Length: 56
Image (tube, rainbow, N blue to C red; front, side):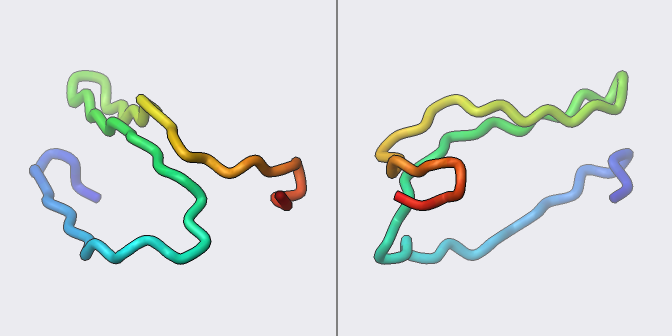
């Protein structure tokens, strides 16, 4: 990806699966001065309890 341009990315929204795992609110920020892309998790809600193996 050439980050000197300002690309746009689109993804079609789909309805959540029946066994929905919850919601995450994320922020994605690119800092052109030092070429760093930062992903921050802002909020999580309605998450299902899972063990280390991914089972409820």
